[in-house]
Image 1: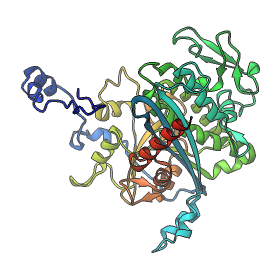
Image 2: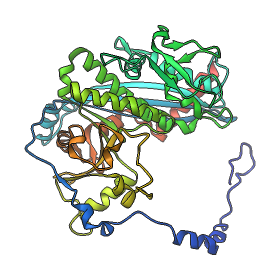
Image 3: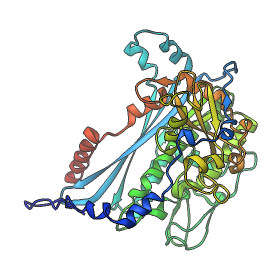
Image 4: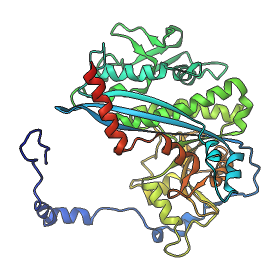
Length: 453
């Protein structure tokens, strides 16, 4: 592996010819030849196309407002002589706009800046944390530094409320008449992973959302279990994607809680959209259960319109394959959608044995849908379903408000990017952190603050 020089000596580059030893190895050739690759459209059996559904274009549409959340992060090195010392900067954005404003814009031949301003009703949320070879002030380890940074982010007051209040409402199911009194952690975050269960007692929680432990303070945000993947030497970059997905969806929960608390009937008029699938990854997968419980409760007692939009990955590639007209008539025609079953997923998209494997059973609180809209968009969405077994034999009625969600997503076409929708594209544009110049400037910012110490 090549390395970069820290002095006047040249960089150590990798050799330019060593790939030939791999190419000429018969063992490598044999291994690749026996691998199974994703299926093409011609491989789809006719029996598996009979479950395609047609969107009802005459459905009543109650949605008046759309709220979308997107976020991202970038990693920067703080000191030139210590490239292993790294910070991560996060930025999340929630964009709220009225469907009526969007429809008016679509009718105009030219959009004025004043018109676009109606779609820029944006809230930004920022977070910074050390992720390698840096310890925060007054903390004794990288793990504790990260725990405290997440705790402080959730404790920050925003519009007379905090994400921590929302987390308590969410975890202990305080939206119900009979909230939960206990929540179990797999281990005490102050000890090594696997040290035994630690129970959070709602009645014992202090006003600052902490719990007493003989081994040290426990934060309510420790329910995310992100401390379990922090390596004091190698850092915590592996958890950044998990944390991004987690915060994006908890921002949505925060707004859902606000509406539920002050004007619950408006839940009938709001569509919430997340960037990425409705799931929790890695160590945060345990949030899948409380999120499913919340969606089920709202569906039964109020209402919930929620969707996740995927922009890349195996499912998007498969969607393009079955809905593209480049090879003739698409298998998935305009105006149709397919509810992806467990067997379909493992047969055509992800390698696996559907008789032994259950896709997303520990991380997804939703089911996947591929939608080929009337105007040609090819979209992969996830929509809440009542339980993990819903995808074994998908039924349209199990996908919460599915056709209303698809009707509105179809209205949100954005021609700036492939199969994009306006709220997600807009949120991404307003909060994303590019390598140039954002990463460079954040790196200079972090170094300047460090030098001022």
